[in-house]
Length: 97
Image (tube, rainbow, N blue to C red; front, top):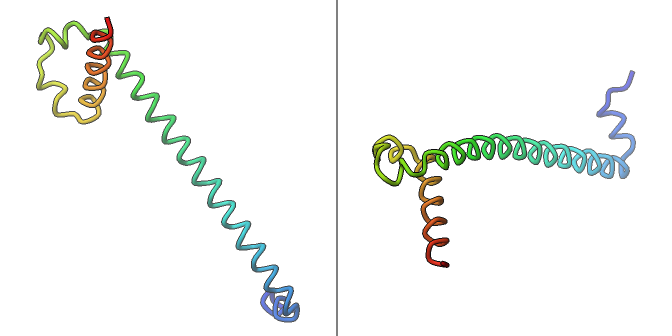
């Protein structure tokens, strides 16, 4: 019984084409896996971000007035970026009127 390598060796020039096809298929599978992994990560990230934006928009007046202490959200990078973006959006909307 011949092994897979012996069969490829007997094919000679077509073995190169066969290896190229296998390599291309492996590359395609890796690319699709990367895309799916990235999509699932982004889905999780935006779900988490949207939930925090909703929470902060509900508490916006308390955040601005200082009722919610600055130290509770300033040390969290994720929360700080969200609040900074919301503040800049509010500032931009205020300057347009």
